[in-house]
Image 1 (cartoon, rainbow, N blue to C red):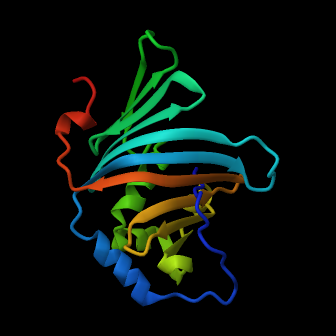
Image 2 (image 1 turned 135 degrees about the vertical axis):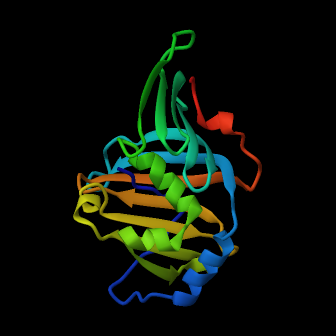
Length: 211
């Protein structure tokens, strides 16, 4: 699964308490959005081994709520590599391009099969509190520079097998700026939002490949 974060998301202590007013502000700021597109920097590291290599990937994303997405992953050190995940809410298409000029490998599966990272990005930007509370305990706390930290702790046993914690950082104007997640295997995934443009039309064709 994922673990995300680049800018500091704040430090939590046993005394941290839930700030319901801050949570309401974040929820209100995200109501009514229909789409978002932009860029992420994704770092994968080992939580308990700071000396281990950190893998960097760049993500171009196109999301149409509630369930359409197109994610394009590239590696700054490998100009030929491109991995895309595309879904119309029913079918998920994975397109792998390892070498320039080589025909891509295309694989189609039903939504819900191996798409944890895809759905995580969609969930974080959509920020549907009612849906989130079905799967997570939600706590909002204050951070420096008027930021808000939302900590999501998984509730279901199956979800706990994939994720130990999910932390979202919102700016003073309630824009999502970072996502951090960790899994039981010790992987940490840090996503930094480099760009996010809301409510621009996204055509149906963007979320389908082939017939």
